[in-house]
Amino acid sequence: MISQFLQDAFFAAIAAIGFASISNPPRRAYLYCALIAAAGHSSRWLLIECLHWHIAAATTIASFIIGILAVLISPKTKVPAETYLFPSLLPMIPGMYAYRCVGGLALCLLHQSESTFMHYFYLFATNGLTCFFILLGMAVGATMPIFIMPKISFQATRNN
Image 1 (cartoon, one colour):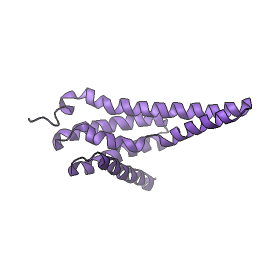
Image 2 (cartoon, rainbow, N blue to C red; image 1 turned 90 degrees about the horizontal axis):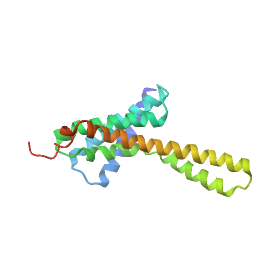
Image 3 (cartoon, rainbow, N blue to C red; image 1 turned 60 degrees about the vertical axis):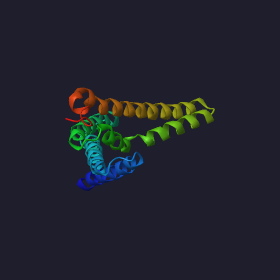
Image 4 (cartoon, rainbow, N blue to C red; image 1 turned 135 degrees about the vertical axis):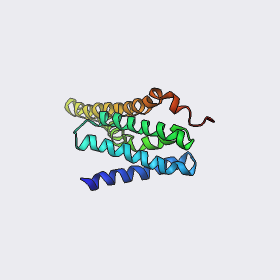
């Protein structure tokens, strides 16, 4: 179980570094992106695997943790919180749920019998709703710390 936890944190960190490199942040930001992503993604893993939370609720809490860490680190490094926030959130994008949602919709439209249609519509709806609520949780969880701590979050690039 510990190896799975560390593996989850490691791959989230690698993904965050890759996503951060797209936006060309300062070099000192890469380490913090990796650490914040590892903390957030592994906390989501713990909530799902150990406490048996639903992925949408666990993602909301993990996004909140990522937001808190990004806001707290940004003034110390003089880099906006968003530089850490967005790359750290991207490994939690629900790609498989979106893929299954679109696949369910396509199969739903291809089948004529009502029972088969309803089965694929069920797959479309459950995966689509799960994807939507994960994305909503990510947005709400990540932006709440910015509004909770406005003095800290907006002082990162100001001269003190």
